[in-house]
Image: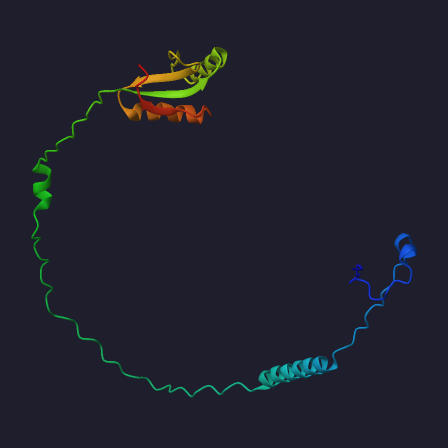
Length: 192
């Protein structure tokens, strides 16, 4: 089956010569712009009508002012109110006197101290030099840490703590986050 060229409109006379030869670019004729006479006439008529309307409104005479009556009008003075205003009502509430004298007992919730303390791990490294470098970065923030290597493991962990309450660990975690020392995780001390 022969390949058909769908782009070219005219068939090629010689395929061998046509492949290697360049055809000169055809110059396109600029499209002549026709003036839309109907739209132009309608636009001119609308503009003329608008100008005529403005001139008619401008020449419209002012309406005559209504005649005003200049006769004086006798206005009777208002009679003064002779009724006496009643005294203000007495307050029904006595909270102004009772609140300063009242004592309220507040029962504080007892804080439970967890049995297992919290620790924070701020990295685990293969070499002790990397772990010591992270420990030094933490020390620059004013926090003490230690490098721990567990039995049967080849990882050196940087541990902070122990903390009695988790919120203490979270406070120090925020200090480290502001110093761009991440990731630090808080967990219960089960490494023993």
